[in-house]
Image 1 (tube, rainbow, N blue to C red):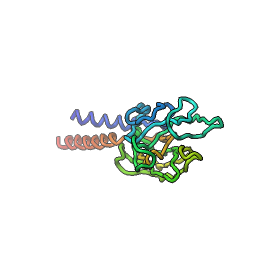
Image 2 (cartoon, helix red, strand yellow):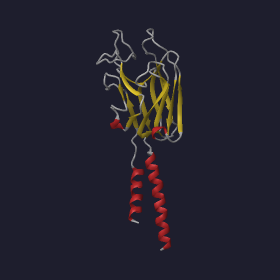
Image 3 (tube, one colour):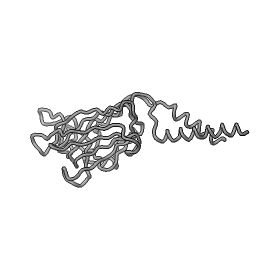
Image 4 (spheres, helix red, strand yellow):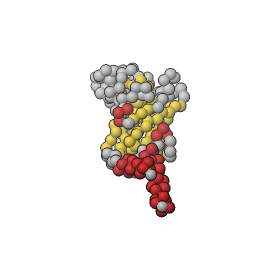
Length: 227
C-alpha cells in the first residue's frame, strides 16, 4: 500500500512540474575548430540534447575567429571572412561528398511543441529530409516533417554557401527527437531552434509513470472496497 501511494505521489509531482516556455538554440559557435563527432564531444549535453552517429560539428575555414577545416561559409563579408563560424554536418566520418545517403538523430529531453526553426545548405542537386518524432531516438509516431530542397553551390563549387531558412510547425504536438537525412557531407545545418510554448511537455517516461500511477490508484480503491 505504501509503495502504491509513493508511486502516485511521484507521478503527481512529475506531471505538475512546468516546462518553461522558450527556445533551445544550437548555433555551434563554441565547437572545436577540428571536425568532431557530436556523439563523442557534445557541447549541448547540459541542455538535455544528444546526437547520434553521423552528426558532426565543423567550423568554416573562412571563419574570422579561430577558423577550422570546413569547406562552407555563411554570410561572407567583403574581407573574405565570416562571423558565422560553426555548423552541424551530416557525415559518415570517412566517405567523400555525395558518397551515400545517411541520417542522424538529435534527442531533446525536454521536448518541443511549437516549432523547429533552422538554416540549411546543400550541394548543387542534393536535397534532404527532416522528420520529427514523438519519442526519443526516432521512436513513437512521426508528428511533423519537411522536405529540404537543394540550395545550390557557390561560384567556387568546392564550397557550400547558399542557405535557406525553414520552419517545421508542430501544431501543438510534442516532439522529442528529430531525424535528418541526406547526401553524405552535402547537408549542413545551423541555428537550430526548438520552440516550446510553456505547456507541460511530458517525457515518454513520465507518461509511463502516470499510467502506472493510475493502475496503482485503481488497485488501492479496489482493496478499500474489498475491505
